[in-house]
Length: 286
Ligand SMILES: Nc1ncnc2c1ncn2[C@@H]1O[C@H](COP(=O)(O)OP(=O)(O)OP(=O)(O)O)[C@@H](O)[C@H]1O
Ligand SMILES: [Mg+2]
Image 1 (cartoon, rainbow, N blue to C red):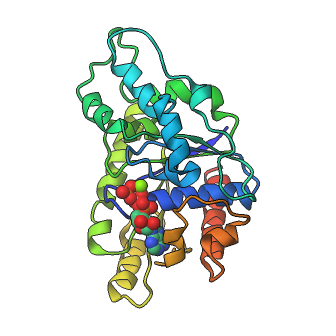
Image 2: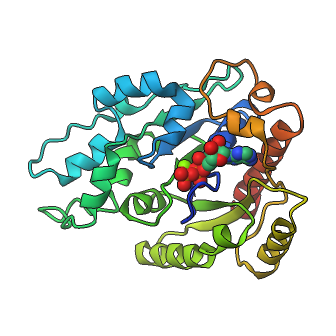
Image 3: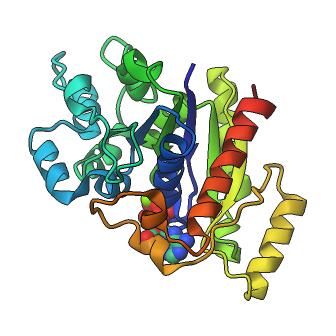
């Protein structure tokens, strides 16, 4: 069975998408795993990182994105326009050494959908539960993968809940400062309540420290506080603030993951983080 991990934080800009793509890259390129990235964020950041803007524009024109899936659920007829096989982009990575990252792309059109889903009745025949839309659509392909990583928007709205609905666990990337970490207890409580409501385990896999600055006292103190006070573990591998990591968001053809993330330890730290994730998932929660 696939391990399905959502990347969530209420705060924007804390490296959710960067972390999702980097772990996907490492899982496939370094650990030989079959990986699917599901981009649930209307900002389409993970999508554009993985396939570039031109290919995204083509796909979007044909409505081969997850926006179509959610639109189907909102429309009054029983027609289903979303086609999983057409939407699923196989072997997308721009890095030669990454053989098996597939993508279910997002669309800017998800912005409208997000607002309308909130007021959606539970389907004319109570068949389209608003938090079950993604689950019903992707069920046929989940078992093709070892890992499914879901990049979520910075909120716990219905689209994020669709991701959590199929998740076996979740990661919380955060910058270790006061405001970025403020909502973490809220997240664990809310996800816990949702998990109880659907009677499925959604394990708190860990907090990923991102954009870490070792010389910052706030950063050092916040990491210490998180380790002491949070009921979700903090990964030892902390991702430093670093220009080349920011530049890795740009879509261009590359040979290796070291080229993509950098030779000054950035590659190694993402690989170490991924190894920690695998250990938690495949040892602790096995
Ligand atoms: N370790 C890092 N060092 C420097 N810049 C980084 C690092 N990680 C991510 N960034 C940059 O920070 C910005 C925010 O990162 P990212 O888009 O991954 O965050 P996010 O949490 O997904 O944001 P959103 O809430 O908008 O979805 C991006 O420009 C990204 O390239
Ligand atoms: Mg993002």
